[in-house]
Length: 96
Image (cartoon, rainbow, N blue to C red; front, side, top):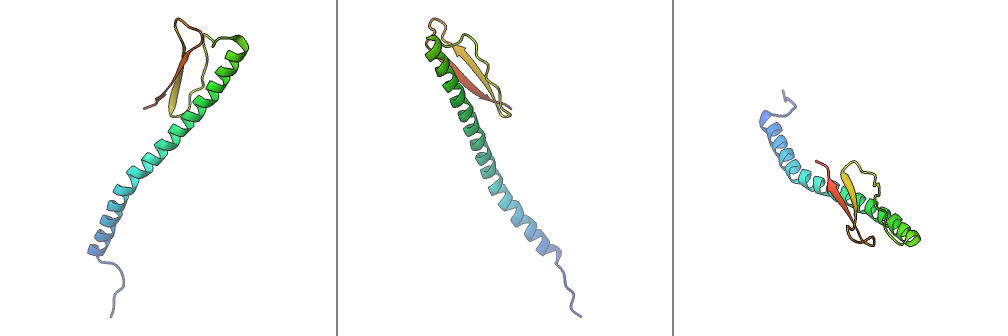
């Protein structure tokens, strides 16, 4: 009589192969996700810089304070130039 099924060795080989594949694929997936988050942060900063440029066109200077909404993965900050009102620095810091 013939028995059907898998032996323990066959199952262990499959588990080992899946482990190797996931060890290779998971870091690549994480890099892809980080790249997507980075692109979102760049998009937000670009939108905010357009708003700042519009404000500069109307008022002749950048605002002293400017609120930038943070995203799920990045915190944003804005700082106008200390001795000049025609420069600013916007930074995006990744959240842990």
